[in-house]
Amino acid sequence: MPPRLIEAALAETAATVDQALDRLLPTAAGPERRVVEAMRYAVLGPGKRLRPFLVLTGARLFNVAEEGALRVAAAVEMLHCYSLVHDDLPAMDDSELRRGRPTVHRKYDEATAILAGDALLTLAFEVLAAPDTHSEPQVRCDLVVALARAAGAAGMVGGQMIDLEAEHAALDIGAITRLQRLKTGEIIAFACAAGAIMGHAPEPARQALHAFAHDLGLAFQIADDLLDAEGSAAATGKPVGRDKAAGKATFVSILGADRARAQAEMLARQAMQHLDFFEDKADLLRAVAGFVVSRRH
Amino acid sequence: MPPRLIEAALAETAATVDQALDRLLPTAAGPERRVVEAMRYAVLGPGKRLRPFLVLTGARLFNVAEEGALRVAAAVEMLHCYSLVHDDLPAMDDSELRRGRPTVHRKYDEATAILAGDALLTLAFEVLAAPDTHSEPQVRCDLVVALARAAGAAGMVGGQMIDLEAEHAALDIGAITRLQRLKTGEIIAFACAAGAIMGHAPEPARQALHAFAHDLGLAFQIADDLLDAEGSAAATGKPVGRDKAAGKATFVSILGADRARAQAEMLARQAMQHLDFFEDKADLLRAVAGFVVSRRH
Image 1 (cartoon, rainbow over the protein chains, first blue to last red):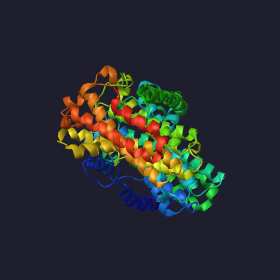
Image 2: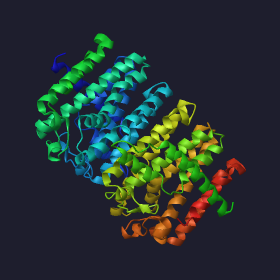
Image 3: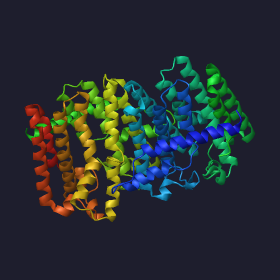
Image 4: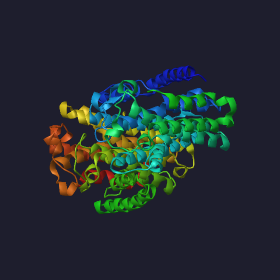
């Protein structure tokens, strides 16, 4: 699939997801409106909506009802945005720029940013568990448990903890790989698995998607490291060169840019191969893997 | 019921809840262990475990399986502790002392405290949605949705947002009542309602518990304001006199201590009357209402 087509597909999905997010987020009113405004600011800015795209594309493999899949896609994006808001805080990565705009604590203040993140995390679970997400409550519970595991201390939060400590520790490639699997990989894996959960997919299909997500997540992270090392703030919409300035070990600092790029491309090819199981039904997912390593933002 | 007996019942329940929390919290291991240690520190310290007590006592009214009720009780306490950890942060209430010990960001650091709170919130939903909590997935979904609504922007987080803004605004009694209903009342209402959700209680029983929770929550908060105005840090385990120092409008600053105390006692009596529906089966809940307004810590 030509890069132009996957970028068009991503943009079309992003517009649909943005509408769903707009509907699902509360409306700012009352004396607590500041936190709702901050939630909407955090979520409704520009964004690739990669994780929602994975949810929706994965769900189509199993003929899942579009409305429910869209709610799950929106919940994953809320959770992703909460993690960005908290990671950007002064006590964490201390970032001023995100998606080309001031971060939430710069636009509002730290307390509001903490609360907006908390409320987005909470809302993600509310959306998953509500009846409109799937006709079977067991499926909704499975989604809640799966997202909670991916996001908690054994997943994303654990990865961010390791990442914060990485500035004081000399991590090797194995340790960095685990860090990134936790920090970004588990949520990407949830996004890829959600459709299979909703569509009662057979075990081989789940395993194929899990393997795809694993390689895709790592390829994505290496590409992110390369953008931090070589990209511009104008293109990425966030500060660059921060890993090196912080003396942080990354795939790029250990492997060097050329080997890191080769590794990302190898992982993307490997990710695509895991989709052989789905034959030509998974062309869009294959194209995502290509997009992830070729993106410039 | 004599005060001695309800205090003994609270202490006994606290011990059981602490064991459940210890089992449900992850064990610190791996390079992410710091955040798990902070989660355990935040939750496993001394605490009245009032909200878990309400869950367990409410659940007994409807013959709910003890094991499941205990998991819900633990989930509510995790959520409560997350809110304390985040509220204590320098950007929020900037507290150094909680339950007689250094707050999480003082014992660890701000980043770890933010992450530990995030992970506790996430774990609360994982516990609710997991099969051991209730045999019916629909009930588990109902619990997730109810807790999320109580905790999110239209509940606890919204209340904390208003509270932070209260330092710049002259709130009247109506505004303070709404603030406190959101900030502490909604979670107390969830704790009182959880047993009814789990036990498929009929509507009149739910309404009685909801009315009880409403008055109990306000009585609790007025008692809290009185302790802040008149108590000692040694007794409460947290800094006192902070509302006044911050020029914050509270029930006590507006009504004065004597009228505030009378109001709390009136609310506690009113709370008890809502339990007439349950006749003598609700004696422990009645006693909690008495305890809440007479407590010295």
